[in-house]
Length: 357
Image (cartoon, rainbow, N blue to C red; front, side, top):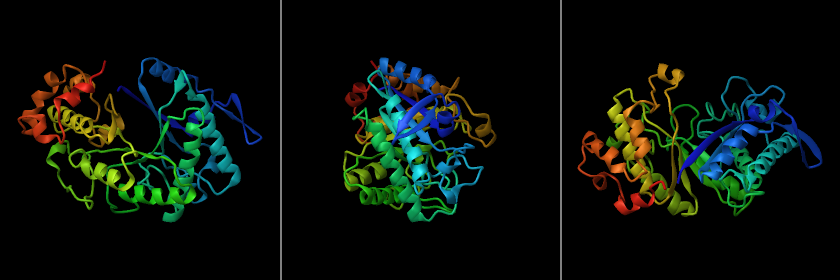
């Protein structure tokens, strides 16, 4: 199944407010979202699954949406303010507007992701001085608002929480992904039982610059592993399945490897990771994050783009009938004789069923 990923920030929704929208007796004004509507409609026509990630950035005039203890400029994205009635209703109005726009028969989003890597409250979902309890409670309440908005007109839409690959707590204020999953589930259950949730996971290599993901550097196959990468992905999927059930679906919504150590290693890592994902029944999507190298990331030694690199052909053909022609050549780079030797559950028939039509 082909995938398309869209980022959406609050600023994109409110900077050009031309469309009136009524919610709970009050009129709000939002952007028409015409550009995104065109993209989503085109994807729908071509049977491409659309995932949209919703994030709260700093926007003058709308800082009331940010939790008071996190209301400090300079962060990328923020935790929402659910403790003010007016701010909470504005948030709900935004979500419901998005659910209306992208819940049409010819313009619909299949997957909604709330926030980015929320186990990193100092970076990607700024929490300021919020307590742990307030942080997880806020995320659960916000999730419920997006849940009802996303499903209002599109009952089959799925709503996701989001974490990175750091499975266990690390230095500074950085929760482990498992810690987020478990605390979120507890708080959501307190708020309302029976809401379906899913996980958008970023199974990067550990550390980020280490492209030889198949070697499993610094990780284990136990629940105490510091990170869950593609090498030990089963730790995550087994835990979710055994603890919360197979109905909790997982998408790998931000994947990529740096080519700093060599384009052949990047290409090998991409092929290896795709097959790992394709052969794990708990995984529904494998989404590559970067087409071209980002100058800011490049300055930090991260060359995640695949444009004009060996990895591009792997990406182009790995889910087609020509996959083996473009992926088998990297078995030698990995040090394996076959994909079945290193990919749990690898079956040629399963891979063929996933070929793009």
